[in-house]
Length: 160
Ligand code: FES
Ligand code: FES
Image (cartoon, rainbow, N blue to C red; front, side):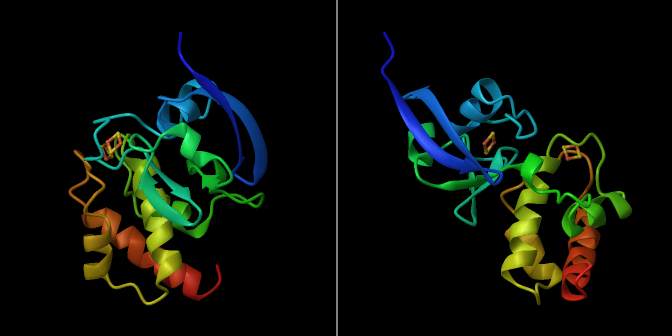
């Protein structure tokens, strides 16, 4: 019999109450309990960044975090990134620059890029490259990803 507990947290701006097995990881809770499949499972070992989410404003790999540790915290997934007006500047920059190929890495990549560009309005291309080192992409070669991040920095600086 698996031990379960009830947790309460904020998910993409809305309060959530859910019962989860104590051993369940946040990624599994998001995908299999809450039906938010935008966050991807790839390595499951903290190596690829496909499962990146924001927790209390910082990014982390949801495949490593126990769901019970979400209690009382604020999570944002790729589903929560867009505004009612449409895509946020980071999402729009990735689309505009053709930075997406198969797309599997993109939810994590965009969450991380959004965090980096929010955290540092002066973010350079080199800093972006270092900040995205934990987000692996098998398709793009990263050039267009970095072009997109530069555009997101500029768009946020201009308030677009
Ligand atoms: S699935 Fe979490 S880091 Fe790869
Ligand atoms: S776009 Fe295919 S893995 Fe990144």
